[in-house]
Length: 470
Image (cartoon, rainbow, N blue to C red; front, top):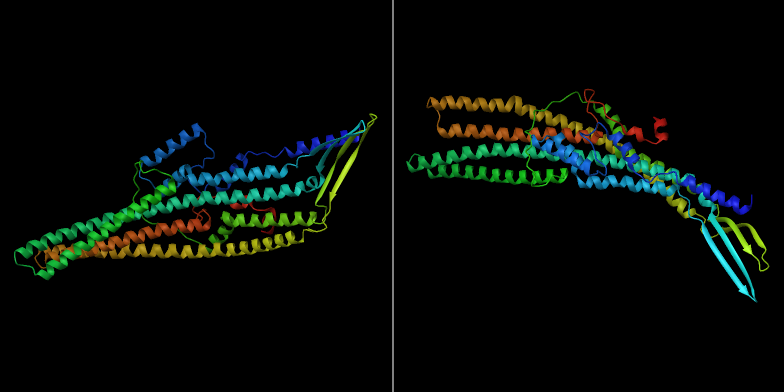
């Protein structure tokens, strides 16, 4: 076999091997979906076709037909949020980068024709970069590590989108319930104003008492107006987080009663280290930089370029000369020391960032767990103590009013105090559900106790070195 044929066969074989890596990101998306499975409601569509889009729209309308819950809002967000779909396309970019990393650089072809004195010499050469072939496996490993990191970041974006929609819906539920309570307060104050006006006209009420009653009603009206404005803002936040449009008609479900299970903070801290995808992505960043450093160290002192090929020359007398060619570019000026030092610093920075992120994740779990416990106790005080007592005060005042022992203003004031406690109870109830959602997000979207359903873990995508260390 001639040298030209052997080299041509080598080029063809390298091209076939390089073409094995796919550019289609569906596999990367499925791996990401597997990691976040069980941590969010419903499904996450990826590049839906017309049929899938129709199914998505049907499911959204089913969710909107009933009062929307926090979980329902999260599912709508995963189906509709356009920013999430933009993040999903990062999988396609990373997969394309991996496919590019498996490709060898294209061979070069040159043709030279020299003539003079009635004679002509023709030269044809085909060359390729041999160093590119040597470092291609390392380059592929680096791209694979980067793809795994992107998978985790996209998974984190999926969970963040669901969490933001839950929180937005809970805040809307709180605002709407508070609006209802303040509306009742305004109605009672208006009745008190009308009654005070009648007493004033009859000469049974002083001007000061009349002014105090009017000021109370005006303050109630102001609070009610601010609550309506806040409800509008929070409804818009739900639209932004879910991708719903203002034309779609839906209502939010009323806030439910809280339930607190046995929250083991130590277990949740450990869960956060394995379940949080941002922590796992930071580990893959360390892995990718470690591979980049290894690649640079192995290729640092090699020639910056080694081109090998075959050249065929046709002499004037018709004789054909064929043989291999080698061209070297030597690292005389750029020895790679600067780029290696940069990579070493980037790797050290990534390791420090990982350590800080792990500590931050555990700190967030402790903080959010404390917030949840405090919110539960605060809501419990209103539900079990303060509200029953306020209702008892209203009941007893009503009995004394019927017995003509107290006046109408005493009854109105008792009712206003009851409604004020109800308003604060609504705020405490909203605070509990927000604290619960924040703790779930701090943990990584997994459960908060053994009674919770099993969740997928980010450890499915951890670097092998980290799995072995644990």
